[in-house]
Amino acid sequence: MEETGFSLDTLRYYERIGLLEPINRNAAGQRRFTEHDLGWLGMVRCLRDTGMPIAEMLRFAQLTRDGEHTIADRIELLAEHDRRVEAQVALLRQQQTAIQYKIDWYRGVLSLTAGQNESATMP
Amino acid sequence: MEETGFSLDTLRYYERIGLLEPINRNAAGQRRFTEHDLGWLGMVRCLRDTGMPIAEMLRFAQLTRDGEHTIADRIELLAEHDRRVEAQVALLRQQQTAIQYKIDWYRGVLSLTAGQNESATMP
DNA sequence: ATCTCACCTGGAGTCGGCTCCAGGTCAAGG
DNA sequence: CCTTGACCTGGAGCCGACTCCAGGTGAGAT
Image 1 (spheres, each protein chain N blue to C red):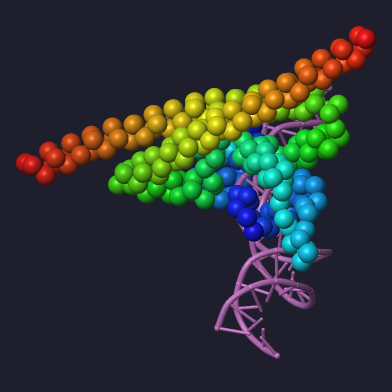
Image 2 (image 1 turned 180 degrees about the vertical axis):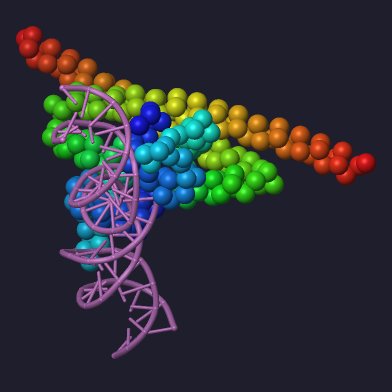
């Protein structure tokens, strides 16, 4: 199995549920991914890793299958997802700040405690 | 139920699994969250929303229960999580760029098609 | 006084997203 | 020629994180 970045089982699963159109097989019935498949898988990876649920990816897949006249819909779908990603990043940044603040706070406690030990162990 | 940002069921679940220490009750047996509880819940929200699995939050909760001598461990845990969040944000940004690129590409197709229609509808 | 209603409990169910299993098929290497 | 190993299939199982259910309780409104 070529390194698509997904496990074989996951690829089979994606094909089963229709997120991938039926993959071509060689004489022995084994999947042979085309460049086209790999391109689509790249898209899937991108959407999945940015948190798009499978149900929505299925909708996107359906739109791409339905032809050129769905392009406006596809743009809308992606643009909305893009907005969600934007929001997600903003929230992550904010929460990261809180985590870092907490770490710094702990560091403060730690240096105070070290100070205490210092004076306690140096009478 | 006060707005902790979690559903009542989720709060009960968190208490059951030990992510929250047992919550004080009023005479009727209903939960009354203290400021301390709310502070901890804020932390939980922060960690959860940045993708920390419950198992790791449980570990963090255990460390805080175990007292001051675990502070170095807590710093380490949070610092490592912080690194993961950093990586997550970087990846999201990258993938967002790909999504935006795709949107632009679709827009290009769309304007070409519109152009075609234009010339097609204007003989 | 009775009704509504928001909470309580333990336990079971759901959902998304995989992941594993048993049994079978080919192709190539020793 | 036989074994190994990577793939095939349909279907079942698993995991994390909730979410819902049935039956019950006490407090306040009508």
